[in-house]
Structures are given as structure tokens and as C-alpha cells.
Length: 423
Image (cartoon, rainbow, N blue to C red; front, side):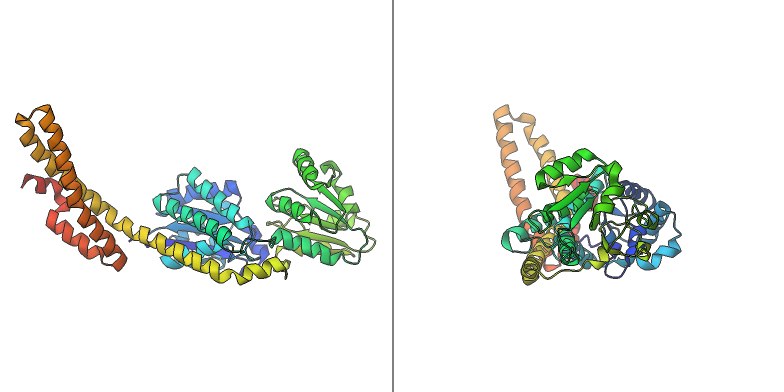
């Protein structure tokens, strides 16, 4: 049985944001790391998931490949391995690693329970693995099982109902911090996945003045039309920040976009709030040295109490039940992977015997007789194969497959099929 699935990673639970942002990987970095792992390790079926809350590398290998993977990350980031090693935790137990990926993909392990964004992030990570030819039969089956499980969760539970996500929590935070401000102005800076979600969550909120700015103005215009917001030109971003009471930033950049130097130039009469949803962070924390400037980052956004969130929490036992059922089904398939080579060898051995015997009897047969003999012998072989295959699969479920495989190997000398045919 293939029980070699492992995971190496760090998450928001035990790693501060200043470390997570330094070790975050974008698409280009992930694909480069996949190629590095392929060349310098024995890992297969590799999935690299990097979000604002985690950087995790899932893989299959008979041995722990943490050192090779960490070396690849260190080279990507220009950091010594010794400086990052202690932040990464390795889970080498196959079953625990499988269950962890299920929980992550369903949103059970998210900072905001049931966060909808994680499903798309997992799908993209899987696509990148496939692009780099690092997804084999095991990972393909595992991921499609996860996708089907997510569909069941959506259909059978209220776990995905409502809007309880990081972007929704940002919207609720914005409402809380502006409750004493009359007609507060909101600026959405950056239209990545989170930025778009924030905009859509603000539709129908108490905010009547919401502005969007983005490097690609066409995207801003399109979303503004959808949400009935206004567009602020990107080349006038300083003025837009000056006029806003709350700036919600989700800009993807290696360096902070909103710096202390920039904020020092602003005319802040009371308070100006910055909600930074970016990892790496796009707002410098030291801008709070400027009077009136306040910063909230991704770690400040906790699961806010809401009806949707309470429904999700209440439905967790049902989600876990569905996950356990899916894992049991996946484990059955995984176990059967062990017997597939034996079934193939047995089928080939019997087919060799059939072909040899047919060759002897067809010498004096006409076309009609040959057709009948071919049909009869194929049918006989399928019936002969049926019982061993069923017994092998049943043995898998009992954890006794190895014993039966040994018996079949001895009975049919499957490791030496050519010798068997000659006898």
C-alpha cells in the first residue's frame, strides 16, 4: 500500500506574519520550486500551497525529503536554511498528511472557518503541479476526491453558506472602526482575488462611498460597474489615500506599497485606518508612528461572530463525517494500488498461456473455428481471473493483500512469467 504521503509547512497557527510573508511563494516561485524538487529530491506527486495563512509542500516519497525541499526554498528566497528550518514542521505520517490536506481544502483549518477562497487556491496549486508534470496517479486521485468531497459539503451542509471569509471579516472590521464616522469613504487598493471579494462583500453595506483603484484600470472599471462603486485612477492613488477614511489593501508586491514616508505626507486630521490583507504585507507597520494612522493586518482579523459563521461552526461535525467517508473511500483505492501490478502480471501470464495454446490448435482450424476458439478462451480467462481479483481486493480491505500476493506469485511464478510459459 502506498503510504508515503507527507507534508512540510508552516501556518498562521504558529508562525507570525513577518515570517510567513518572507516565505510566501507566488506562481513563478512555486513552479521553480517544483522543478527543483523534481531534480534534487526523490519526491513525487508534489503539491505546493502558499496563501496568506500557510506555505505547505505536500509530496510522496519513501523517505523524508524535508532537507532537500528546504534547500530549494532557501535558494528561492536567498535565505540560509538554518534561518528557516525551525519554522517548518514536517508530518511524515501518511494518514495524518492526507487528513490534513482534506481539512485545509475544506476550510476547517482556515483562519476564518470555512473560508471560500481556500478551495480556489488549492485548485490553482494542483493545476501548477500538473503544469510541471509533478502530479501522478496518486495526487490526481487524491485531488479529485477532495473536489468531490467539497461538492458534497456544499450540497449537504450549511458550511459554505453565508459570507464568513477574510474579505467578509475585513468588511465587518471596516464597519466597526468607522461606526463613529459619518459617511466614511472606503478605498479598495488592488483587485486580486481578495480585493474583488472585499468589493462584493461591501455591496449593500452601510458604505455609500467606495472607491476602487488598480494598476489595470480596465479591471477596476469592470468591477466598479458590477458593484456600483467609483474608480479612482491609479496615477492619483496618493490623492485617493488622502481622501479615504479606510484603505483596504491587497496589493501583491514584494515590498510595502504604503510606507511611513508616504503616510507622513498625508494630512490626517483625525484617524485614517489601513486594513492590510496582503502577504507579503503591503502596508508598513511603522506608519502607526504617524499620529492618527492605524494598521490592521491579516493576523488582526479574527473570526467575527456572525450568523453565517455560527452555522458553519455548528456544521463542522457533518463536514468531518463527510471527510472521513471520503478518506475511507480514498484509502480503499490506495490499498488497491498495491494489487494492481499483481493483477496485471496474472492477466499477462494467463494471456501468454492462452496465446500459446491457441497457436497450437489454430494450425488446422478455419476462420470460423478460429473466431469461436478466440471467443471461448477469452471468456474462460476472464472467469478464471475474476475470483483471484475479487479475493485480492477483499484482502486489501482486511490488510492481508501482501500474503495473497505472495501466494499468487508462488502459484503462477509471476516474477518469471517466461519460465512459467515454457513449462
